Image 1 (cartoon, rainbow, N blue to C red):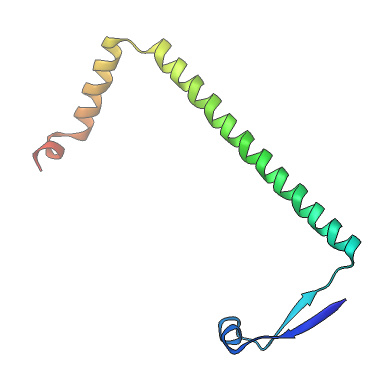
Image 2 (image 1 turned 45 degrees about the vertical axis):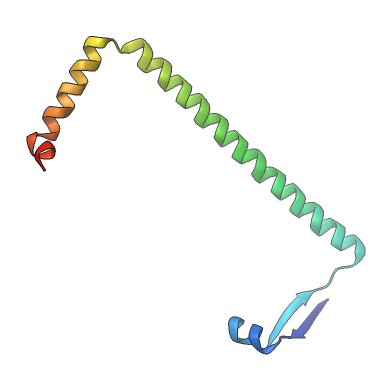
Amino acid sequence: MMRYVLLCLGCQKRLGRKYFHVETFSVEGFGRYFKRKEVELEKNKVRDEMKQEMVQVASAMAGKFVEASMNKDKQAQLIDETLKEMGDETWQS
């Protein structure tokens, strides 16, 4: 069942219209609506948690990879190469 509500002048100016439709629910429909919203929110929460876990695992794996493949000589070489690529102009300005 659809109902229309007359908006106050401030709302009319913000929304650009005089009327706004509002859906009305039976008690059962209202419960189903909120249950769907609750399930949707829970799914989004689980997705976000899974993404965070994936980032943590990837970060840990990258750290272990770097730790295993990096020694002091390799680190010094990478720093020197980076500084050469950046050039002297970077440090003079």
